[in-house]
Image (tube, rainbow, N blue to C red):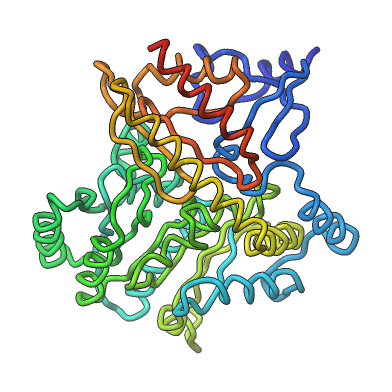
Length: 423
């Protein structure tokens, strides 16, 4: 049997209607911003393989760090034990996170990083015998696919099947110059009536919700309101962390810093799964007790896996290097140049850019959002022309690895321009 035949027989792919979707492409290798299939075709990975490969594929520095660690220790239980790479990674993270972050809790993906944050928040209040109810979040937000993460995310086609199993959350519109007053009034009413436990948000850019962008100043206002009412502030930086918006973390754009931060995706440079939830000292202190019932009873078998930690340490060093920072700046500048071209096309609207993310909406008569079928036409066109772009319905976005070259990025722009002529 061929690889594709074995795949068809045995595998259930994510976010895929297996009956109607075309056969997957068998990728055999990758290097830099490109991946290569079994037939020798190459594709520019313009979305960093679901936003994780921030340094591109098969980065040699991360490879060497992994190889070195594999030869010493592959894994050890993290309850009652520790190891060098976890300790060094925690130190490294705390040194670059907002200064109020004090403790690092390891898990294994973005959804679990969020789940940890939600459970920390709920138990923070429970440990003090204080009743709090649900979470505030934004409309169109997405925080992951576990039940807790879905509970705080926006209700959509992703969550419909599980509506009876999710806990309560309260969603407010994304703030803007036009609606900030009404949003603040709505939040004040929610806070007074519901007394929520926490406020969770994707800072500045909503990812899977359509790369929707909003101003840090409005988020600062909402955080200030929540903090005055003793609501725990949770930043979901699973996508926005590690340079994606130009600064190391999206929270760096904020005056009012989160109490808890969720990290994953780019943390290991796309090599291995890892999730991290950091928190302020005052949260940790509520669990620090002689009372065993106040323990945070949460963990994963592969918590702080030494190989993943080695990859993360190497990835962060690369991110902070002058070369990588220059690459990020080049991407931002090239995006700005491409925006000037896009402005002249009446087939698109709502062009937006923050850091290395560029997005716009296709004008369409179909329902806007993830179920818009134009995504299938455009995805097929991009793949046939050697570019991996995965539209979010009628939203086209570029989220490239930082190692992408000017020529490669210009090729992505060229194919996008050509695709607008076929719709």
